[in-house]
Length: 265
Image 1 (cartoon, rainbow, N blue to C red):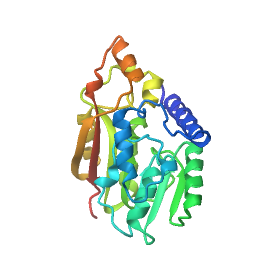
Image 2: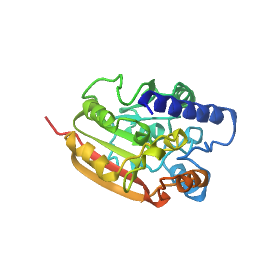
Image 3: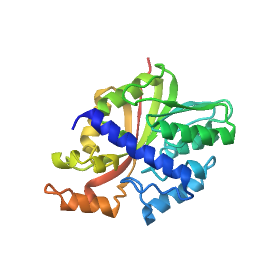
């Protein structure tokens, strides 16, 4: 399965989520990394308590709250990778204030349109949303104080390219903080070729040790795992995992929140 096929499948899945969010009162997306169960409701409830929270922007797609550990300060310029409908960007806006700036990037046009629509209602002139691929971002180098992301990098076929891009766009001494899905052990090859599981944040996840190795090989410093917990795997995807010829235990799928710093020049 080539990378372009994967990207098209992911894009189509999240375009459907964005359209559903626009047409229905309920924002539950019913994808692999988002399901209306008690764990997901609990995460969404935590979000509602954060300053800057916008219900229309919360499509229940996250696997953590990266802003809790991101060390964002007033006046920072922050980039959110896979910004969706703008949920984390609006939380960040409340932290950076009027003197900061927030940029969200997403490669699904429908998501970017939804985020812009939400921002128009809020009237923030220091929040922007752009269309772009995380593996090749149309953004300047050495620009951002902090890069965040929430349950997105597992969807990117080439993780090393994505983290190399994060390194490029960060200012010297800047840092990233992402919540993401990883595994304890390798995902069997047959499962990696299941597009439903890929769009569901599982088939594209890699072993945690390999994930950390990519980050460290690129030169990030002070790499820290802040939070680690079992990932939310909806029942329908658990069935696919357990019924497959090469089984993988849902318990081996983990959500982590991790940070790392670009060296100072």
